Length: 156
Image 1 (cartoon, rainbow, N blue to C red):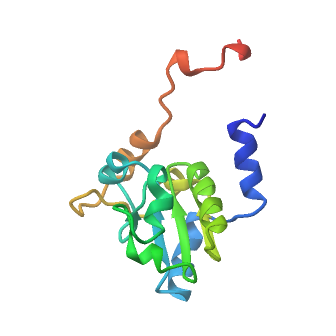
Image 2 (cartoon, rainbow, N blue to C red):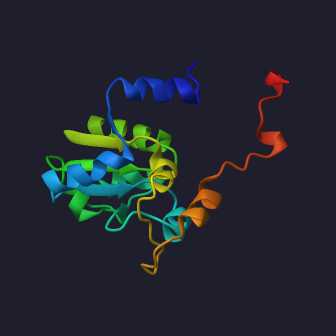
Image 3 (tube, rainbow, N blue to C red):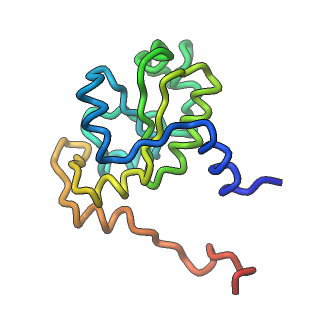
């Protein structure tokens, strides 16, 4: 049986990871770079990278194909485009990027450290209205908030 961290490690064997501070160079080298945020809509609305598109991981596969209510034409036609997949910490983006590879996307990358690292690097984030987010608000939003019942009882 594989656990979550095992799945992440498997994906790391196949998916190129990019640090937040390298994204600007990627965009300069390829202005057509597509930024795909795979978080949930409420997370995206609260803060996201400007010009990123929302394709929640729960419906990612149908976002990437024609003939579905969730179809995002830019993705459905984008199997040859360079794509950077984004999430909160860099784990969901790895899983999503690997799935997209299996669906035929050739130039796929995952944002290592996710938006947490993006925010810690003082790179800009905006809300659903286009207002820039204060990095301290980002720190609060991206901080882990595990409850006691979510901790593994085997670790004591």
